Every structure is written in C-alpha cells, then in structure tokens.
Length: 377
Ligand SMILES: *Cc1c(COP(=O)(O)O)cnc(C)c1O
Image (cartoon, rainbow, N blue to C red; front, top):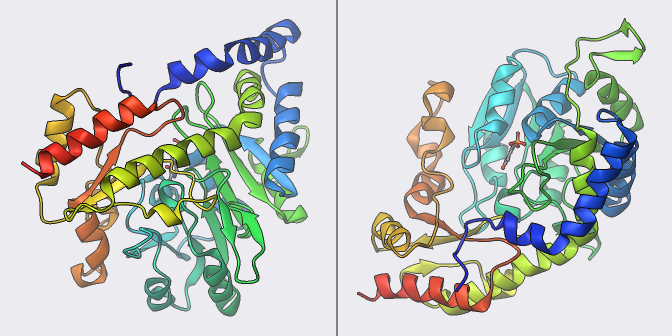
C-alpha cells in the first residue's frame, strides 16, 4: 500500500506533471513574473468556471478577505458577524481593520454559521456577515442573503475551502459558492481544493464598481500609475502560481468528484457506527466538495482514536481544537459560554481523516478498518 498522506500533493503532481511543467516553462520563457499573461488568463478562466463577473487575483486567502472588507469601505467600530468554528484568518482580518468581530455559533448538522445565531447578533452597528463554507460545504446562502437584504448588510463569503461547490436555491437553480454574496474570497494554498505551489488567493464579485475599487486596493491604491487615491496594499498572484493554476483548473471538477467518491466510501463504512456521526451518503453531491472529511466521535475517546490512527501511520487532524471565542487574541466580554453550545461540543468531537484526490480503495479500507478497530475494542 502507498504511504497514506493527509494531502497527497506529490501523487497529484505526478499525474499532471507535463501540463504543469509546460505551463511554468512558458513563464520562464517570457520572463514576466509579475502580472504576466498567465495571471490574466487564469483570471478569465476562473471567471468563466465560476460564472462570476470579476475575479481579482491576490497574494493569499487572508489578504483576499481583508481586501474585500477594505473594498466595501467598512469603518472602525462596524460590527462584522462570523462563525466561531473556523480558521482564525476570518476573524483576524476583521480585528486587524479595527472592525468589531462578532462570533456566533454554528449549526449542528452542517457545522456552518447558524442563521438563528446571526439574527440574535444583529445590532444597529452590524454592517456585514461573513459566512465560511466550512470543510467544502456551502453555508445556507439563500437564507443568509434574505436576512442580509432585510437588514441592509453586506455578505462576504469566505470560500477558501469550497471552490467548485454548488449552492442550490429553493427554485432549483444552482450557483457556485463564492458568487452569491456581495463579494467573496478564496485561497489557493497548496492543500486547498484548487491549490497552487506557493501562496495565492482571489476575490470574486459581480459588482463592477466594487471590482474597480478592489483592483486599485490590491495595487497600492493606484488607479492611474503613481496616483494613489486610496490606501491600498501590495497583494499579487505571481505568474508562476497562475501558470500552475491554469494547468489545474480544468481538473477541478474531476478532483472534487474524487473527493466526493472518497467521502462516500468513508461514510458507507463508518456512517452506521453508534459512536460516529459521519457526513450522510445522501448529502454527498455537488454541494459538498470535501475540503475536509470530518467525523464526530460521540461517547468514545476521540483523542484516543487520533493516537491509534497516528500509531498506525494514518495522518489525521483536529480542525479546529479551540473555538475562536476562547482564543486569547479574540476574547470579548460579550461572549458567554451559553452562546456557543454547538461549537463548544464540536471542538471535543471532530476528527478529520486523510482527504485528497489520490486516495485509493486499499488506503480507504485500511483507514476505516483502523477507526472501527479502535471503537469496537
Ligand atoms: C485557508 C483559509 C484561509 C486563508 O487562506 P491563506 O491563503 O492561507 O491566507 C481563510 N479562511 C479559511 C476558512 C481557510 O481555510
């Protein structure tokens, strides 16, 4: 059996080596490392793939979130509601811009931001909601957009984990995650569903005026060369990374399908165990692209299971071990434990298994057997 990796970037590269190498070679031949043709091509290719009017590439997913918030003109003291159960980047940029983060609990079944919790957190100072499409599953964007429109709030989608996922609306129509809110951000960190070979990110919007503002912000606030109209940043996707992404974007749907297939096999083997809550087999469709495959372990020793898997050479991880409202940097007197019952439970129960595009049946069986062996002991 091949050694099991949490994310198998090498195995994936071996299968696309020629395309990726040729694409990178083009950059070396043309010597335009910044803002080269590859960056423009990638921008256009991703706009077409997502069905969004504007993609603005930038240096990473954290910058993308920050720049999206700068573009909307949010001001110090404005309250921004986001999920307590996510990676810290989301709340970090809110705090960095001196906006006021308001963390709220998530829903038990999807682990995404809770609509009820958002409703309770809205005040006259609230200016924006940041849903995170956690682990590859889109948040309930239809309801979130309705609520945001009712209260005149911006919606910024953190789509770092769900590129390619579909959101289905009640009329049956579908839109890609990241194309529904006023603006969205994504990350091309190597282990993300669409990863480059370094850092990368992008901002998406259908709003022409906002896209124009953001194109200036990523480039030192310049709209005309050496005229700085607003305070900006320097945040670029370089041509080599864009070349890698151009080679990989045509494979994204196939890659997401491979993740869904692996998830289906995991859930078939594990879903009926009394100590496990697994993603439901019937929920595994285009709406979930499994950036992570995450189990909840109920009434059994989650940390013991983790150690058992690691001892057998199976990588696994706890995403995320500490709720953001308990992180030193983001403590706030307004947060009471009673506001976060689901997140407080999830951090004790979750464990993420290896998930990538190269998992084979033998590896999946080895992993699921090891999980069952521990729980049935
Ligand atoms: C990875 C990630 C980010 C940040 O992306 P970087 O490219 O690493 O800056 C932001 N939000 C979420 C939810 C992420 O998973």
